[in-house]
Image (cartoon, rainbow, N blue to C red; front, side, top):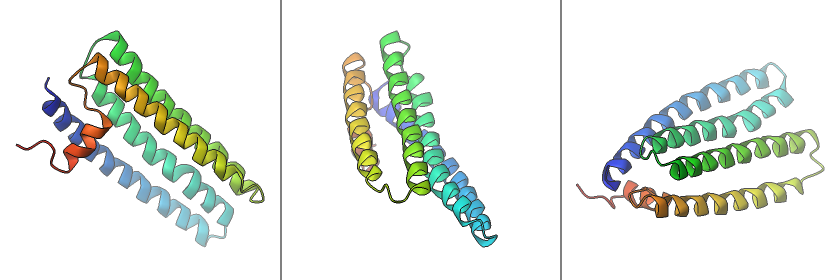
Amino acid sequence: MTQRERFDHLYEAGKRSTRQALLLGVFIVLLGVIFWFTGERRLAELVWFVLFIPVVSFVKVWARTKTLLTFNEAPDYRRLVWYEYWSGMAVIVIFCVLIVTLLLRPEQANILILVVAFNLFAWIASSKIDQKLATIDPEHVTHKVYERGKVGFFLK
């Protein structure tokens, strides 16, 4: 499968997962609004901050992983795709733990520095994994190629 064909598959999977994430996001926001207006403000905050971003992120990461796994059967390629998936899941879990800690103990706002530092580390790790995937499979659609393709890099 060519890089262009892979891009098209990833792009369609991305659009589907965005729709799914949007629907789940609307549900979570509405659930939080219900809690807010029934006087459960702390529960509304937890729902908004601890569910919204992680659920949307999970849907996007899972869709990308499922699609990438269809492109190449090589064990090294699949292993790196799973590494990228599990690193994304680790970021989501750590984000949840840190946000819950911040919501329950607002005086510890310095935790936000940890959130930013960890996300920066995860972004660098994901980039390195993406580069390794490109060396294993020359037709791999890197994050950079995907972003460029969304704005017209691949002309029909």
